[in-house]
Amino acid sequence: MAVADLDKILFRHGVPIRFLKGIYGTLLEPKAIFRSRTRATSIGSSAVVLTFEANHLGPLVVAMHAAVSLGRERVNMVKSIYAKEDRAFESEWRQQGLLLWER
Image 1 (cartoon, rainbow, N blue to C red):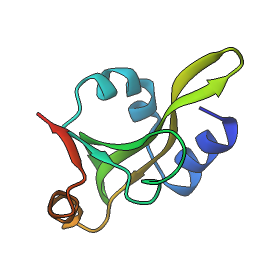
Image 2: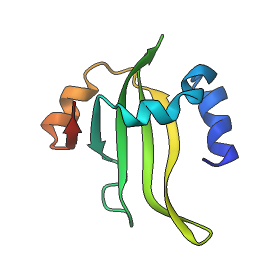
Image 3: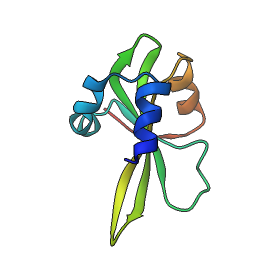
């Protein structure tokens, strides 16, 4: 995760630090994984992980970019974490065929 992304997650999106401390466990136990609607045709894969966590604005989602070059390695990178304020997003994403996996 880039420092600029971390700054955005903590200060603009208001994600609690306790959530970030447990991010690896959260990503291992997602509620659902969706294909990215905004980066669907970009090079590489992008996905949005719906977590079981929420803050006062709504459920927390993690935007991920797959196979990002980092030095000699290719990694899956967290690009953003934010609350989805629109409560209907999950059913809309399902109707759009973006669901890849669900628990």
